[in-house]
Length: 334
Image (cartoon, rainbow, N blue to C red):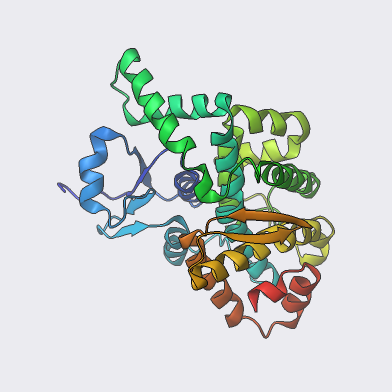
């Protein structure tokens, strides 16, 4: 490996939401880090480190290897606890965790759908991925690489549940979520007040990636200026104040929890977990009165289990239970 680095090394990619999530966190905490674009020239060193062929991968100064963005942030937070991304208030602490999971899983569904559902977005993403993966390639070679990427990735959309049958539901959820965020972020810098929480990093990363794609970018810039400002702010977030309390946040945050997390994300999560347990090849769940069908997602089965374990650890918090009950979330977490 040569001389050990004094920095954290992040192997990632600009078009990877989970990679930019970790980078944003490191910027916020002023953690010395090196951003390494995992292009083909770095693939051999990446593969020598990786247990899984997934980015981001973080190599610590003491040469520990971390993968998976949520555990990476949790391990970083154990080392760099100030300013904390976890509110001391128990209600807000778990809501932040819940919003992080909502971003990672349901937000990714929305982002991935928009990126690969239409020709204009497929072409844009494939061209950028080709240039990122092969920065030394010539124009003619990049055309071929881009075509290959487009064919492969557009064919994978069904893995996250994107299909002609679910397209309207996913895009409606995106626009509704952005509208709810617009109202919530109109008078505050971050989801829970004056500084970013765990939930900001998870949800922002998906919205940021959507903002880089033509179709959702047009949607965001036409109607959601406060969301776009948050997207820009979170590229290099700063502490601008403290967390607010639930009474200050609830007027605009409860609608997001109730109408998206409780009505879409968690019922889908529970149905996905049940399908995995039963070995079903596909599942159908009713979301806001409409049937939604896809094949199960294995990773989310594991992450829902972790989310439920986190709730189980704080289930005696009656104020939290009441908020989750009102939001239509409690039944899916207990």
